[in-house]
Image 1 (tube, rainbow, N blue to C red):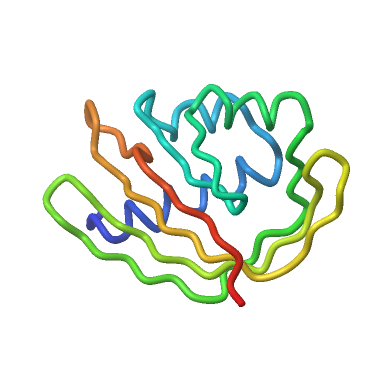
Image 2 (spheres, rainbow, N blue to C red):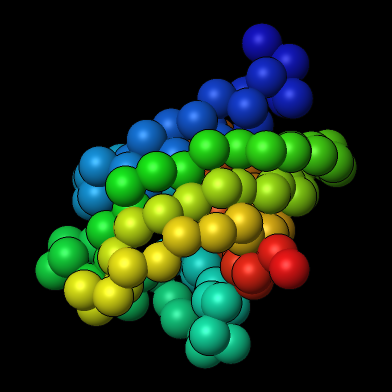
Length: 122
């Protein structure tokens, strides 16, 4: 399997884990070093991200890729994605297009996200 195919696969696993709030799968895909800038501008780490899914603060009902660009570097991949999303954050409904940038790093043989940024696409 090529590196591009590997990244496409982990991206699919990530979407499925986010949709199902699958904590075990998210834990495997997110690096302990993860930092995410959310659409509200706040910086959160892995523990906060997992807790948001575990407690139901974040519930994603739909996440459909509209555009995906993947740049492959040695032991690193950067994914630029445009997602049509809907769900709930703290029981407040949201829906719209969001831009994601994710940095994947091959760590101990497995791909994990080390950094991400999410912003509304206007």
